[in-house]
Image 1 (cartoon, one colour):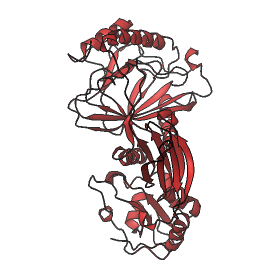
Image 2 (cartoon, one colour):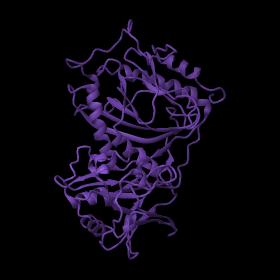
Image 3 (spheres, rainbow, N blue to C red):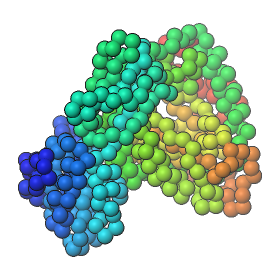
Length: 463
């Protein structure tokens, strides 16, 4: 390789990285290990000594000098006169290696060196979720194999526990009743560790139509209670910045392949997703990383509605994976908190027919929007009915959802539109609207949704 590894702060760097092709990838084209790339102006020993000060696992990050050409791939205007360092995370796809988040780039003139090494190279978020029948004792294991209790982990997604840890640290999960060691964990990156799987409720298909009717009645009424609007149509399509998409993809990739994915929990009478035919999967998100994504996505949503109304973060949900046959019934989101929202398509594979998001505009006309990985759809989620009632045709489809509302105003939906708000586009005669559904479906009553649901329901999957 290009690195001589040492646990003692000696120079661990040997050959200079001049091209992305020199960075080893795994079998799926993702970075196979953590790297810290430094320009010639950096004192490499300072970085390495700080790494060794804060973790005893020198083999878990590679260090190398990088060429001027490589440095300018990360900072186009780099002069070559100061120290620049870039922390690359294991699992990032090759395409997104040139696009780290700004925080992952150290600039000698502005940044605190030790803080950078700790925050971007050493410390990660490590989580535990249990579906084990008994309480689990989560212990941290020191380098001398001493055990320290971290938490007592109870059953279910709502009891998920997160902690900040350091790359190379070790944990174990011990059954509190039997004292049996159930699982052992090594910290390699931001990760959620799921022990066991939830039991899905029994569902009586004879009740499905009744529950669906009741749901549509409630959702249409909730939509009509929202008087405040923000945009002409209530939705729009966009694209994630490369650095944020790379960050999301890296977390998704690292956790989807190992212990991070679990069936999503649903109430026994929930028909908003047809989990009783096709369970959805969930990859839980760490608090700090989740907050960072939400703040960055906030900038996009704020720009979409304009600066006349200042928004605040309220929720970010996911990562949710829909599997072949999945349906998301048309609904609106929680009124006090979900004024404007964003759907992020993270990944989709082996999908035979584009699985379009279905959104009804302010005049209750159906629109269908196709998404590719990295695309986003903005939508007024408490006002505009939305879903994917047509079943997913093959493969899987992975989304993230983030939500915002006018700052400090849980009753925003009762307000009149402030001056300068675009008028809702009720009349579309004379203009081309490419997203209009070929079905020309319009919702006047909840029965219109119910009949549409029946029309697109595959034979043999419903009562």
